[in-house]
Image (cartoon, rainbow over all chains, first blue to last red; front, side, top):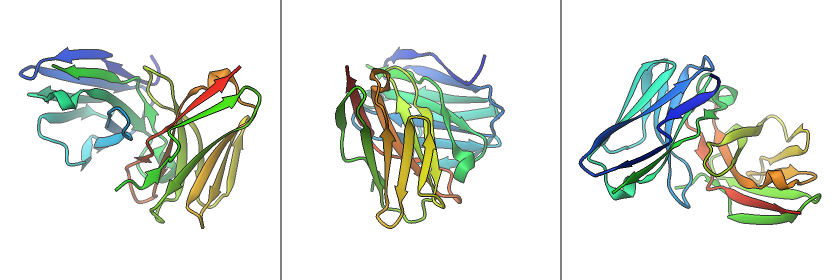
Length: 115
Length: 112
């Protein structure tokens, strides 16, 4: 498999559920990202991992918990979400961070609906 | 405060004509700019980029122009094709930063 994959593609969950989103990149990149895309808003950066270390947490509520066990895998653990958290969650990877190394490759996204 | 702005939410162009998508930025530290294309139900795909040391980069039908003094860049698609219909995002980064700053996107419709 090539590129950046995300599972599941669609997820419906209640506010009391716990679920996880998974991202895997097969590009040999060192940096991975979680973005949130809500309707009519720009892509919002949530978390950045570089060489498995979290380098950015963009004021994201604690009900979103990232995990990066290695450079190829990134998870986003979800618990007690709110309906306004419904959005498209995109994972991306890049060779490195900064400048030309930050050409990011995106996965197809997970469409999350919180009831 | 949004540092990358795409002020036109949508654009409609006839097949074969030129599509021009515009983007403005406010942060003078940005030195690398990218355009992404996004189809519905898919993630954004990288299209073309330009470094601040250049004012033009061309790749086939796609050309990006950068005007640093005006803090403005544009994407030209010539000739436009129906398959180009998608949302186009402008993004910017600085060499010392790790976050791509995205605009809200412009939805391009190319009609036959």
